[in-house]
Length: 118
Image (cartoon, rainbow, N blue to C red):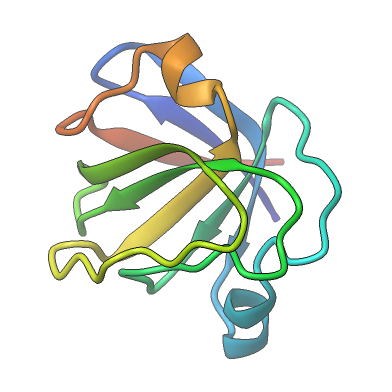
């Protein structure tokens, strides 16, 4: 299933075809090996409170979200071969193509809404 992700605070669309990774294998694989991410794509990792970009080839925008979908930490254009800290407030992570956060004006404290795409 794909998801539409809106920044409710700024009234901006962040993704219209995000995938959700919930199983151990899906969360473990994440975006490893991907050569690109198109605008509109994303990966929502649930549950999750830290990530790495080992074995990735592209930078990504990263949002750490609490249980209500509020952004508790953001990392624009996180390069490959990095590991983040653990953010104990975070319950999930949304990974987006680099540049989406800047283009949308998304900030920490904004609230995101996820809606299934039929």
